[in-house]
Length: 105
Image (cartoon, rainbow, N blue to C red; front, side, top):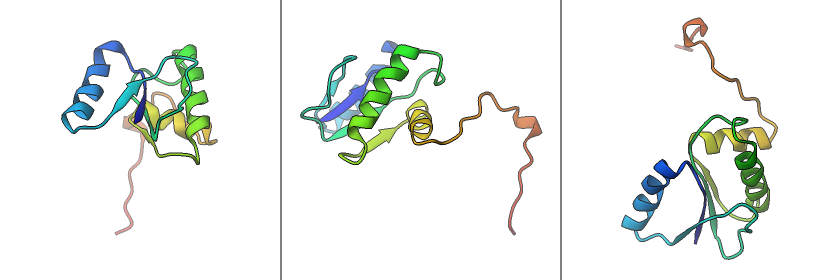
């Protein structure tokens, strides 16, 4: 059973439809709900980390419950919040015109 940390309602159907078409069992988690019965956590994409404190709080709780116990898949925002929880750095709104790309060739 895949526990889905809910994304924006307009996007949730993309995740549930994809999982259903492939025969995966899932449940959309509610804030405060535990991951009991889940074997994987899916953290969906959405607005930047820090723009929705209630969502951040719920996802942090689920991530900490899942970490080392089951696989965690973070899509876009989900990967960003995983990075932050694990002590990584997240840079907001980088100006790509000022980034210097290099190669080791």
